[in-house]
Amino acid sequence: MSLYDKLRHFADGYGLIAIMVVFAGLCLWTLRPGAKRQGRIAANSIFEEDKTGTRDDDGQ
Image (tube, rainbow, N blue to C red; front, top):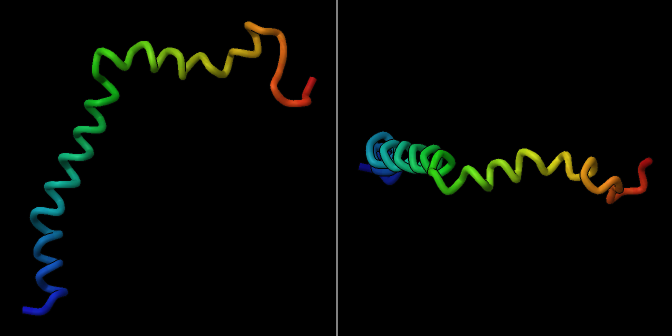
């Protein structure tokens, strides 16, 4: 069995399972209870200009 066949067999089996576990973990990480505050801060960060009345760049 060549190296290519060994790597292909690994990717078809264990590699796919590992990728699925990482994907599910990242999805659940964003839905954890502690992420609510951080998500709200990130979502409202584009409106910081409205609160301060100034801009960071040289625009009007």
